[in-house]
Length: 210
Ligand SMILES: [Fe+2]
Ligand SMILES: [Fe+2]
Image (spheres, rainbow, N blue to C red):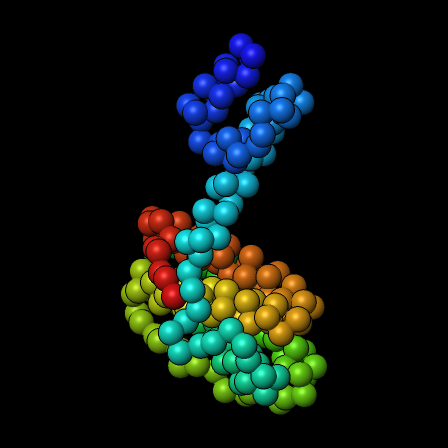
């Protein structure tokens, strides 16, 4: 009886409200749930569910349920962004000047090659959906200033990440898990690009929400 009181008291002082709903007759067996390993797992689950609640929503003009034809158009938009990135990284990696930007210039060449890989993967998916891959890139901004070039790249990467997040949700809503997997692989690299650019600029990756 004393143990039960103690158990209740401890529960009142914790946030594990779920424990309170379990009948007292469960008794000693229920002490398992108060063990450190369980508490750790429970905290992780709570944190994850909180994260999910605050996950950004879809872009204003985009919807979760899309047809195959609409997905082709959306992927073509992504492909145009990949072309834009290939061109920007190819040019910027060659024209960027200044001793402090030499390291990032080398990194930009790597980005250019990765963006080409992305373009090939997206084109393959467009073909799988019965569409024709676009040949037109999004416009590429130019500048004489190294920092400005990196800033343009960073903004484009942010735009790309936002769009891929939406695309992943749309692919999953369609039950197209292979597409979702391909997009997830790409988004990992896009986020690395963001970090490289932000580091070169000496800033944190800025928050940009859908
Ligand atoms: Fe890319
Ligand atoms: Fe990228």
